Image 1 (cartoon, rainbow, N blue to C red):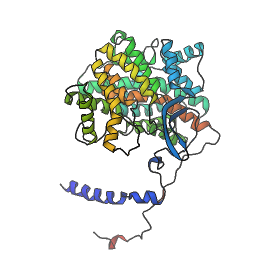
Image 2: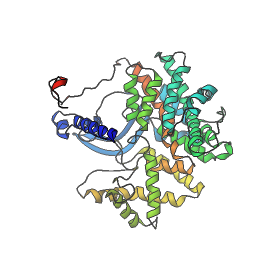
Image 3: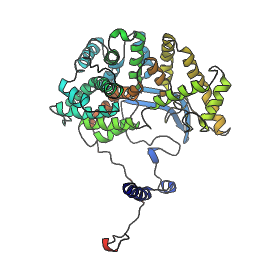
Image 4: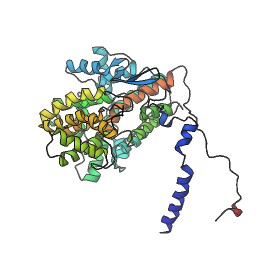
Length: 454
C-alpha cells in the first residue's frame, strides 16, 4: 500500500511537470510531429532513395492526387509488374536496386542472390545464447537484442567506411529472416507448448521461400502462390521514403556515427510502437469482429451501418477508428494497397475465402462515403485504404501467426533502413541531426532543502 501511495504522488508530480498546453505550440509556431498546419510533413532532409507522393501543392493549397511510390525513381507498379510478368521473385532485386541505385543484370542479380543466401545462417552458439536461452514474449524484442548481439560477431563493428557499411548492411538484411523465424519458434516453444523446430536456412530458395520453410518446414508446406504473395509483401514494404518514423529514427541515430547495429535496433524500437507497426493486426481483428456482428456480408447498408457504429465508438474496440483507412501522405490511393489487393483475391480463391475478401472489398468501397456522412457534408477530407488493409488478410491466408506480422515488415524495411544509413553517412553535407526545442517552463529559484515543503 505504501508503494502505491508513493508512486501515486510521484506520478502526480511527473504528470504536472510534463503538461504543455496546446496553445503554446501555436504561439511559438512549433510543428508538432514535424507536421505543417495543412497536415503535410515538414521538409527535413534530401534523399535519392525513395519517394512517396500523395498530393501536390498549388497556390499554397494541398491538392489530392493518386498515390505513387518510387524506388530510386522507378514506380513500384512497374517494379512489381516486371518480376511478376517473368514469374520470379523480386525481393533480392529490390534490395539491390535500393542499395546501388540501378537494376541488376541477370548475372549481377544471380551473384547478389547467391551471396545473400550464403549469409543467412547464424552461428549455433549465437542462436542458443541470444535467441533460445533468453526468454522473450515479443518477436521484435528478441530481434532487437539479437541485432545488438551481431555487434560481437563483427570484426569491425564501428567502421563506417563505405565498403564496410555495405558489407554490414547485406549481412544484416540476409540474416533478418533467420533471426525472426528462430525468435518465433522460440516463442512458440516457451509460451505455447509447441515443438521447437530450428531448421537450417536453404541457399537454393528465395528469401520468401526460405522464410516460409523456416517457419513451416517442408517446402511442400506452402504453395507457389503463397511464396509469391510473401515475396510481393516484402517488396512493397522494403522502402517508404525517409520521413516514416522508423527510417527517420535510423537516420537520426546514424547521423551521430554510431554503429549500424545500434541504429537498426533503434529503428526496430520505433517500428514496435503501436502507432507505427502492427496496424494490419488491428485491421484483421476489426474484420473478424465485423464478420461476427454483420449477418449478411454482402448487404451494403448493413456494412455501412456497422462502420458508422465504429466511427461513433459503439463497435469493435470503441476507439472510433476504422483501421487500414487513411494515410499521412496518400490521399486518393495507396499504390501498395492496389497492387496487394489483386494478390489477396488470388489467395482468397485458392484458400476458399473469397466471401471474406469480398467483405474487405465492400468495406474499402463504402468507407469513404460513411466517413463523409460521419464528418458532415462540409468535410473535404479524402480517405483511402492503406497497405495494412489487405496485408493482414494476406498473412492470414498464408497461415502466418499474428506475432510475425510486424516482424515481417522489419524483414522487408531493413533494406530501406540500411540504405538510408549509408546515404546519411556518405553525402557531402552530412551533419548530426539536432532539431531545436523551445523551453516554456520558465526560470525558477533553487530552494534549500531545509526550507522546502515536506
